[in-house]
Length: 347
Ligand code: ATP
Image (tube, rainbow, N blue to C red):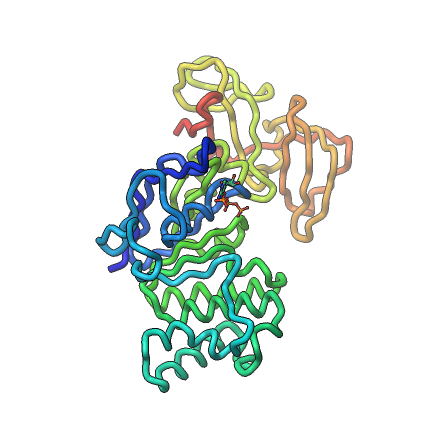
């Protein structure tokens, strides 16, 4: 069992707080993605789990053992970090084999593991090359192969695919997902790429300014953001927000249209809808079209509703032109509501 438990972990650099009291449990064999914008604290949290950074407070447990006072080597983890430490004077084979030799595994086992992981990472043909002669993307794949070859219970990865071109990235993503699921590894994976997060994760922990705002399955994070930040960070284009004023009988007035909404002791709250959950209909929100961008099967219409930016992803059969006013109705079950001050979900 390799459950990872982060308890009340904080990190301060001088008087700057990079992490505020983080609590997170990653279950045995789970694939957890830490997702957030640059500077939100993802790497710092990963480095604390790895033992490359000491927390200012709190505890880290791996597989039922408290590890925050142990050096990295004794934590039973493999890591792939941004500055992947590949030895340039060793061949690709020897780089991948490095940890296995330290463990004194028999040569046949080393051969088997190196060959297998190198093939998975599409670097099987490079095994005899010196790593100093590789491209950034190839080196990155050597680093991933080396970590996988250890067959660890826990693997920590910080943007391991960031140096690959789009197509290779897509391929490697699928490979990684497959191999990690098969090997029953517990994974924590850092990225700022929401598509990567969505496609890989069992659960995503969305971070903002040193806090975990929501940790949930990808579809849950997408459909039911716990906070306004999550709705605007995840999804491309992001969620739309409009002010909603209280009307009678628990209903709310949004751009002159009435909707059933939550009970709230507020005169104004925020109404939210994703761009793809809109369709033209007579009883819709009046939207003035500013820009129309064809996206193949869909068209992205950037509009204004009562002066607020409002985007809709519509079927490309719908003919729209700049300057048109179109009525856009939200799918009722997809409407979300947020508190204007705490910015938390009201449902
Ligand atoms: P990125 O995606 O850009 O790598 P991140 O979310 O991984 O960002 P961190 O590297 O964890 O962010 O950094 C979090 C914050 O802590 C940043 O504001 C960073 O400047 C700060 N920070 C990180 N390491 C140190 C340090 N050694 N001393 C001072 N501040 C630091």
